Amino acid sequence: MSARPPEAVVRDRRRNAARVAAAITLVTTFTLSFVATRIVRAPLPCYQPVAHLWRWSAPPPGGEATICMDYYGRGGLALAIAVALALGAALMSRFVLRRELLSEITEPETARRRRTAPPIRGEIGSA
Image 1 (cartoon, rainbow, N blue to C red):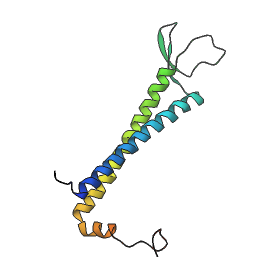
Image 2 (image 1 turned 120 degrees about the horizontal axis):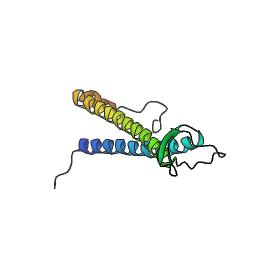
Image 3 (image 1 turned 135 degrees about the horizontal axis):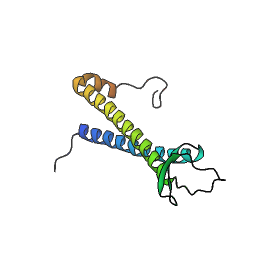
Image 4 (image 1 turned 180 degrees about the vertical axis):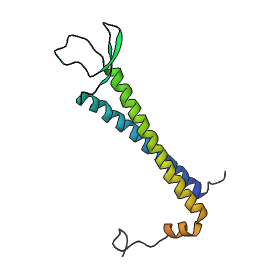
């Protein structure tokens, strides 16, 4: 069994970090969007089961006598926002990762110096 080169291990860890960042963004954004659409009375797709129709409106106020289910509209809107932001986070992390890897390939000496540079005065671990 051959050992993997350290560059491959670092690359895999960076890719995994990008995936974790996208997943955290997805979950957090979905939760915040779902709650925010409940707090702010924004127009959402609402299903009226008695009339068997969908309408695009704010949830009816408490005095209105219609039954309107906005759960699916709120969930769909929150999911769309979360997926868009998670894709943006994934693309940005891939861009940053690719940029770092390309700089290490094209300028290996500079990248090596960056990794082995002495600590800046005042940093943790400096004398």
